[in-house]
Length: 509
Image (cartoon, rainbow, N blue to C red; front, side, top):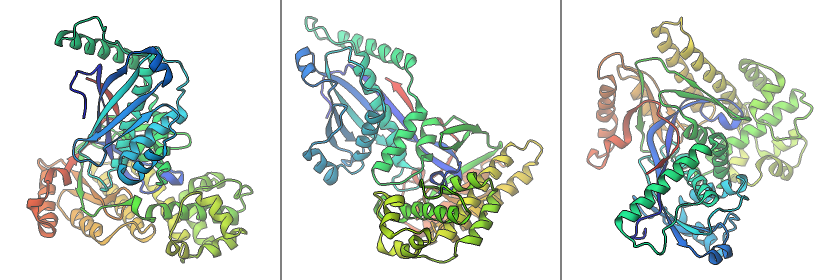
C-alpha cells in the first residue's frame, strides 16, 4: 500500500502485447519475423517517495531503493525487494521468489538484467534513498499467445531505467523548514515532473539494448525465447508491422495494405510454456538439427559454437528451398533418441547436453524422440514465408485480389507446417482456425505465438463496411456460444479487432 502523503514523482511505463503475422518459432532459430504491437498492454504505475534525507544514512546504503510491488487485479505480483544495484538476493528473498512471487519474478529479472548491463557506476547527485511503489495493471490475457510476459518485462525494465535516472540526477526534495501544504506538495510534484521530462529528453533510453536485456531476462527464468516479443514491444511503430531480424538486432517498418485488419480470438486453451518442456524442446531440437546438418554438409566449424538453422543457411549460402532439400537428404525423417544424435555428432551424451542444452532440462520422453528433420523443415520454410509476406505487402504493381490470395496461401502453408512439422497446434486451435477461415471476409486464419493453445489471428478484408464486426459475431455464435457459457466470458477481452500500435514508453504524470 502506498503512503497517504503525496509522492515526489509519479510516472507510468507502458508496454504492449503483440501478434506475429508470420514467422512462428523462428526468431530463436536465427531468422527474421513480422509482428506488430497491440493496444493491449501492461502498465507499471509508479509513485516515488524519499525514504530518508539524511546523508549519513544514504551513504550507508548507497543507491539503495526498495521496490514495493502490487497488482491491481490480484495478489499475484505482490512483494517487496531491496534494490542496491548488486542484486544478490538474500535467502529470504530467494524463498519468497520460489514460493509466492510467481510473475513478480519477471519484474525482479528485468531489474537484474538492467543492473548487469547498464553503467550504474556514476555517483548519485542526491544523498537520498528512495521507495518506488509499483502498481501493475494489464489487459493482456495471460497464457494466450500474446506475450504477456514480454509486456511485463519491457514495462519493468523502463521502470529500472527511471530508477537509475532518479539516482543519477536526483529529485527536488521538500525543505524541512517549509510548512507541508497541498500547494507546496503540488509545486514539488510539478518541479519533479519537469525534471524527469528534461532528463529523459537529454538521456533517452536505448530501446534496442533494453529489448535485448528483456530477452535475456526471460531466458534467465528458463524460457529460451529468441527476442521477437521483447523487440516489438519496445520498438513498435503506430500503424506498421515490424520486420525484425537478430544478431545484431535490426528492425524496419512494413505497411500492410489498406482495408486489412486482424481479428484476434482467444481459444481459451491456455498456452503454459513455463509449465512444460514443449517450447524449450523445440529450441533444442533445432540446435541439434543444425549441428547434424552443418557436420554432414562439411562446415569446418560446426562443433565450435552452438549453431541455429539461420547460421547454417548463411554459412552455406543456400536458399530456403535448397536448405529444405539438404534436410531431406541428410537428416532421417523419424524420431531419434539423444544417444543416436550424440553418436552421429561423435560426442557422448553428456557433452551434447553440456554444449547444446546448458541449464535447459528436457523430459526423458522428449529426449527419446527428437524430431530434427521436421523441426528444420519448418524453420527454413517459415523463414521463406516471412520474406514472401513482406514482398507481397510492398509490391506496388500487384493487384489487391492477388495480394489477398498470396496472403491466404502463406497463412495456410504456415499453419500446416506448424501442425505437421513443428507440432505446436492442438485440436481446439485447428477447429477455430478452420471455422474462422470459412467466415465471409476472412482471408485466412492461423494461430499466433508459441501454440499449444492461445489465440487465433484472422486476416480480414474490411473493404465491406462492418466486416470485422460480422466476423466477430460469427465467431461468437459458432465457437464461444457453443463451447462455453457466454455469461462467464468477457467478449471484449477474448475477441477483438486490432491494428498495429506503438511500442513501450515512459509517461510522466
